[in-house]
Length: 237
Image 1 (cartoon, rainbow, N blue to C red):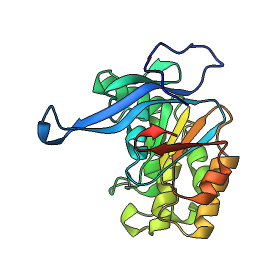
Image 2 (spheres, helix red, strand yellow):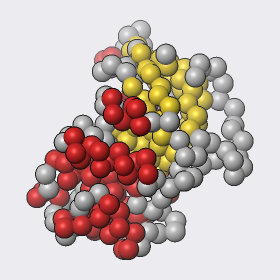
Image 3 (cartoon, one colour):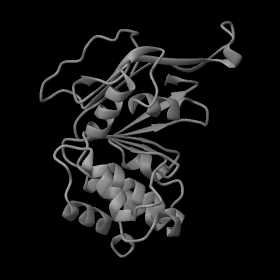
């Protein structure tokens, strides 16, 4: 996983990786000063094949969440490029990035993305409506059932426990079979039993052609992964 700094277009055919980052780096300027740069990522390559579950590990501040934001198109790299499902995601208009993210990527962050005015089922159905073909009610109910939320699917987000919120967000990220699932510490706020349930879903029930990248501190999640990538000070070790 050494970086080359090149951002050539990846091949676009049915056997292509579902996600690629080519030589991405990201730096920030403290206080807007040109001579005070902070490097968050340095020349990182990552390729995710269909069916892979890749765990990204490393100490706090190593660039894990920065990398996830770039892979999701929520931020642009200072250099390099990100491709999803054969289409370039980085360095495009925000509306285009949002369209590609909605169609191809399920994103699970540490903070809840559930809308307060919708119940759990409504939130999952809304997330599924952005993907083609749009997910139906039966898929949403089945997914919530496998996550142990069948009895809570009519509940509003404000009434959920921390573990229930994490699992509802996971359902919203997975509905509609996205090509890529990006998860930031999906088991950080759940019990050991709930962590096992989330891992079962990630490892057993993911669509065969999708790829998953999980940023985690969990030993159990790393052990369940197809491959582990370690970041140290913004560089892939």
